[in-house]
Image (tube, rainbow, N blue to C red; front, top):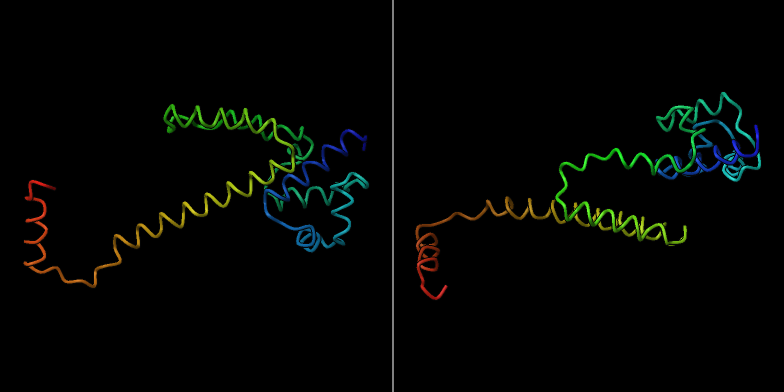
Length: 159
């Protein structure tokens, strides 16, 4: 395998492993190899045999062509995002974000990724709590006095 192809496969192996949140040890166990084999493949020290490459692609749910494609093809696929559901402000924000991200080091990009994952987790938790709060007080029996109190507040001209 030429150095350029070996380097591309190495970068893609690392990319897809991290994308799938699989450790080197976990991938090694699935493939029946030692964990240091994964490290040597990702660093381009050794080449992956074709049978193992097919196994890896099956684990990640990708084609062999994906492993041989430029490591930047993942970014070019972002052009295929259906932005029809986004409002203009969101599209502009995404464009500005990509413009800013390309200036960051890989270390800082990894930090941004972790931060974004945390934001998304927090957002999902907030949404779940909102739903729980909306439905969680079914234990209170609403009385006529409570309804009248609410009506009085709404009728108050100072409200």
